[in-house]
Structure formats: C-alpha cells, structure tokens
Length: 59
Image (cartoon, rainbow, N blue to C red; front, top):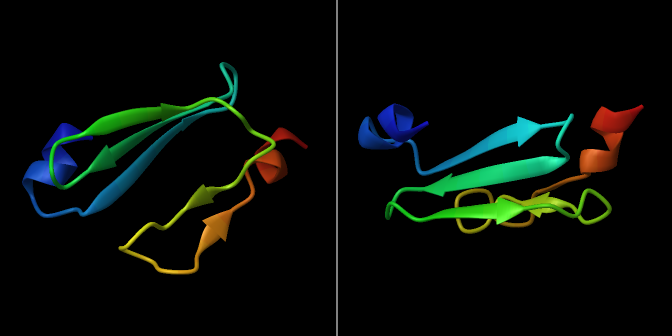
C-alpha cells in the first residue's frame, strides 16, 4: 500500500476479513487501524459522503 500512496493514491484500504480489521493508508503517510466491522469506513475527504459497510464482506 505504501507504494500506491507513493505513486499518488490519496486513500487506500487494506481489508482483512479474517482478522476483521482495515488498515487505512493516507497520502500524508498516516496509517490507522479500523477494527469495528459494525461501523462503516468512510471515503474521508477523497470521496466525501461515501461510506462502505464492512458487514457486507462477512456474509
């Protein structure tokens, strides 16, 4: 994912359904972990208003 960001990607989600976690990579180099699959992840300022329901991946 760092290579994607280094080449211009503004926001990247690395989704691990087995561990039920998402690593969120941002253009400023920050990485955060989202571990609550009952809460959607957002498109932040890259895709304003977009939210992805992670529970859809657990079906």
